[in-house]
Image 1 (cartoon, one colour):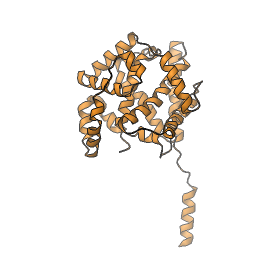
Image 2 (cartoon, rainbow, N blue to C red):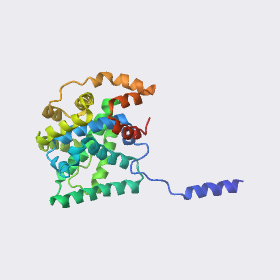
Image 3 (cartoon, rainbow, N blue to C red):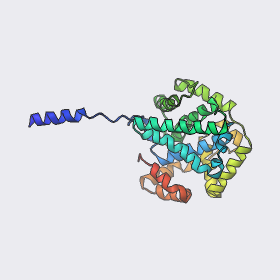
Image 4 (cartoon, one colour):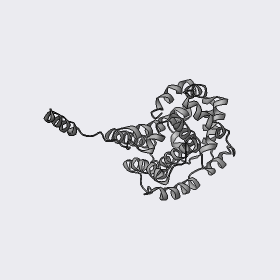
Length: 270
């Protein structure tokens, strides 16, 4: 019996351990495992995307103005897939993103600027931290470094040049990018019109309130979003609703019907 047990253990040990792109115990999985946090990441990115000087690239195919929420969910969806995939699948997803961008560059006969790639990567880092801190708690410096490291590896795989090497360097570069790469343009005005059209007045107002809560001051100032968000006052109530499982009802009320199923699938961490 002991021999059989030993052989069985040895056989089990022979199986390779599944290796994920992001460690199973990482704070990044906690952040990207909750639909609530992802929605706030989405809200922040929706605001900043509208100001980015390279937003015309997102207009090139016409898909962004036709379905701005769907395009942003697609970007967020890729990031989430990478966070929860095995190493090989995550790398394949990153390579697929690169191929899509390369195809777009061929169609337009221009290269997407390196700083534009960095901007998107920096948004994912920043709004991951800001959204979690707005809804849950402050992150430690070690946890922030962990968030940075995950997305640094994404950018490194994509071959994005000039990336910062640690969270401290990223803070300086992020501040510089916000100062240099944002402008309010006709694309800004059009995107916010599209957000309003696709969300409706009530949900659009909630989007603005979420953006006030998570965007950097310079983004808020350029968009003139406002100084205070009432959402901050109701976050404790919402946390209670999660405990009694009433949050799904709230999401059904707050989200357009065509996106509810997508959002419900985002919840991995309870």
